Length: 524
Image (cartoon, rainbow, N blue to C red):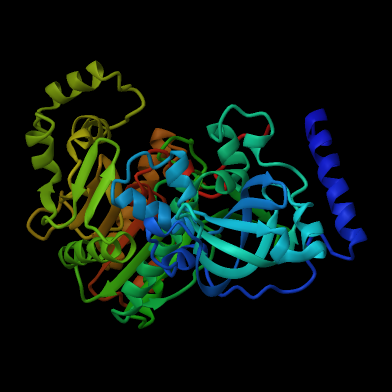
């Protein structure tokens, strides 16, 4: 804490002491029953007739929140109260293209004015009012109405201190504006949420997306389940795992990189539709689209294939948009994405040719393109791996509108069924929007003998390449999973969607750390 913070804290500590002298706990002592949010209180305010030039008062409300503005005028004070519903109002303003959404007037309309009058409150309550500071938590009761100027207001007759803020909000503490740096926003999320209606709105949206997704699947007879986060053998994806050690068993365990193998065990056991909202951990780099700890939803449906999951995916995205946004149009940077249109379906090889301008089978041309893109040939031990790196560079920039990329090469997906007519291609899709992969699905490989072969090939390739990000540890494969397949996995489809990227799309956020409350960061 710096000297200025000490100074600000000392001034507020004096007011806290004065409250205690009045017999009032500056941090609240009794529950406070709220009847209305700020948004709800504003909605019931009586209409204003400009010609009347008089105060109008309606029904009584009880509201709680933070003091976001404080203006003194003798025995009549004005404050602005903000609560969580400012996020809802912000989102409504955003969707209606309210001009100057970050301006003072737009921000003011996301709170509610408090009129604090000595004549109404009396001397004891006025002593409490005189101890208020910006960012204090308070509860108020009074009639909702309008001031003579027509501003929606609560004419306060009772004020309760619910939590004294011992430090001022950043904009009062010498900052040039109310904007926080990206570093502070991510490290001190509480300040970000306090200061930014946009950020609060993003995380409210995230919560509602997850709730809507749960309803979507439970309404379709899926069971929500929980599977282990610590695995004896990593599996279900190609990624470098985090390792931990269990002392009692003297056993290394690996933080989950994907829940897939456990979820499919449940299908074997007869739970024919399952989903899990899960945290995964991958010991890899950090970027605007990657965080080492991230959230996914994965679901598995017996007797279905990847083509049915494409239809389900379109239905899911439209349902989420209707529930959470009230519109099927997503705005993401310079892109406008229309979820009403049928999602494009394009094979991996066709996309390489039509969007990337390259023929997968023309190794010389693809290799030359890799060199021109600065892709290291030495770090890709096979042509297939090199070609896939080129594919990502030349195709993904074109995947803006919702697009299912299908029929990926078999070597890319060891857990996926091969096409009966072409064993070099799989029954798989990846869903892209705004140049991001947001979903991945398979018709699941359920032949235990082929699965063992695929695992062995995966181990051999990763070992030969020295690939530390293949999820292969000491050449181990999950034999218990293969045994589970021996007991019979029915035809089924499985899919995963990254929740963090989904929130990025729906909230229009360009950086993944702006949709994760506490992203992974290097310590100070």
